[in-house]
Length: 276
Length: 88
Image (cartoon, rainbow over all chains, first blue to last red; front, side):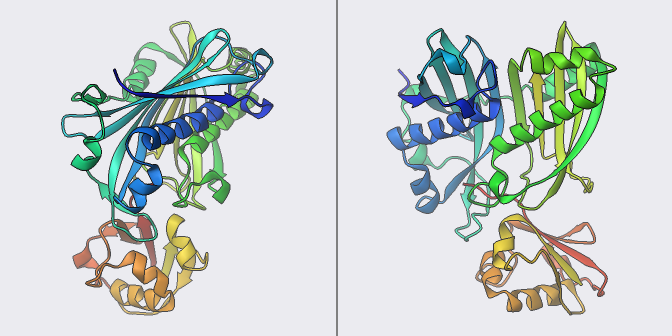
């Protein structure tokens, strides 16, 4: 049976919206949980970076809300996390996490990262690689999956365009400051969920009068997030979020494309899809 | 030419993000830049003195290969240095 790490987290008010865990709070819990699993069962993240010269870049993440968990429901929640190596050439590390409260599983997340061979410089720069055999050897047989994880984001975008109806679009700008960054002075991926959420609210503010259904995004909350990261936002980058809201299958979806404000023809840095 | 420095490299230039240097080519400019900021040289260059593959050099938005660093550059040209990927 795949190994898990399970522990309690104390719930504080900063983790919640009025009716659920904040997506950014879930992201932080997920990153912490994945780091803990690595430390508990294979190799600590710090050791991996400093001694084995292997880093990870997150390229896909999913969040799905399930049972209710509000601030007033509990003092603590139970976090459980598992990990797998994925891909025919061990090219991905997948982490699955659940956060459970009194009503059961409140959120599920799945993260897929790709490894980097670090050059050893102080900038932690690196190039894509496969997971080293010595690292993969730390996983049990049932923690290695030969098929790769495939992000649903591109498929969702196609489905919204084919089957959905555009309701509104809006663009916001922001700068990546240091409190948005991780140790390598590039954006901490969780913060890009925050930039996307902020852009959604700006879209609702701007267009909620002409399209009142957009307000469902705040009244009902987000039930699912699918995100993919293609390039890294870096310290002091001036970025913009292009948000498009769709009516699709009786639901509401927001597509956020995050990229440089000054177009460099390199494509988006990240795409975040929020569904209501 | 004006070097634009971003992200993880900023701490090696004392957080100067637009740095004007002299030189007739991009390579000359890189030499002047790394002489001014020796810590940057350690991050940017490998032991042979070549730009590490994990950093991209672009002249006025056009990415240069290592063989193209001898391209001429004037004082108004812009040279971007971008770290392709960093991983923690």
